[in-house]
Amino acid sequence: MATDSPISAHSHHPLAALLSALLPGLGHAIRRRPEQAATTFVITAALLGCAWGIGSLTGRGAAIFFLMLLVLPWWAFQS
Image (cartoon, rainbow, N blue to C red; front, top):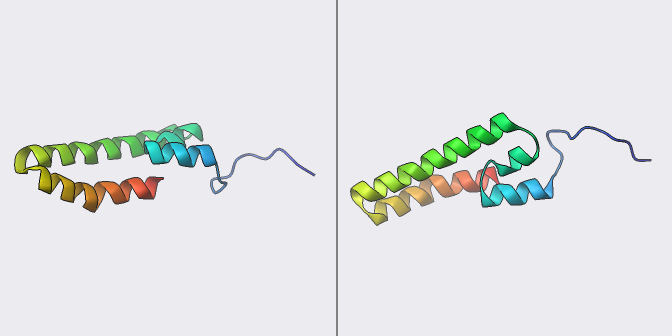
């Protein structure tokens, strides 16, 4: 017997997971959590901006190191 129940915080939503893998924050937006979506998007944008800034100041190698050390784990954690 199926009942209509609200989506819990721990239920799985495949589309949200897929969209989060593409751009962190989109999964939260799909799940109607605008504050979490905005926070996640701003942190991701700040990390990418830092990587760009590091690349501009010190070179591509340092930017790639920063991306691998902080940005990619953040991206994986969010998706």
